[in-house]
Length: 158
Image 1 (spheres, helix red, strand yellow):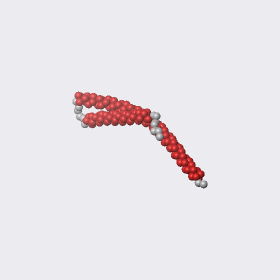
Image 2 (tube, rainbow, N blue to C red):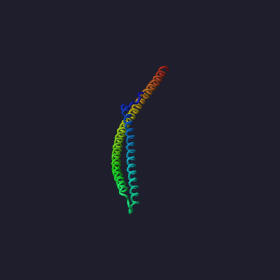
Image 3 (cartoon, rainbow, N blue to C red):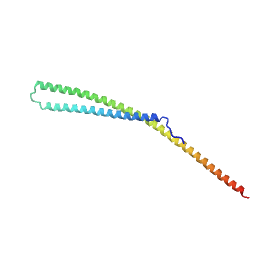
């Protein structure tokens, strides 16, 4: 009996590896999104803290140097927040691109697996048919031997 051989087995294996790599890249992209969002949160927390500290000085005299340094810090934090939010948008775009690539790869793998299953089912059916033909031949030979034996014994009887 011949062995089952899927002609595209190497391609299926390669596509499975590529799918796994695409999954890992998507996970890395998700981590990058999470890190970018954490950076935004951290900067917003710093800005809120600065605002709270400045709120404590409302109604009190503040040195010009103190006011300028707080103004500069709040401006820097605002710019940093805008940059961090842009980094979040870029990271999310990369994530969705990786997710799309992974979905495409998964579709290719699924198509190859479906093709492999169909060929496996066809192979099993062919094997079953071949086995049934062999069994039929064995049964026919046995029946022919049995009828030949009966004919031989009936000829010997006078």
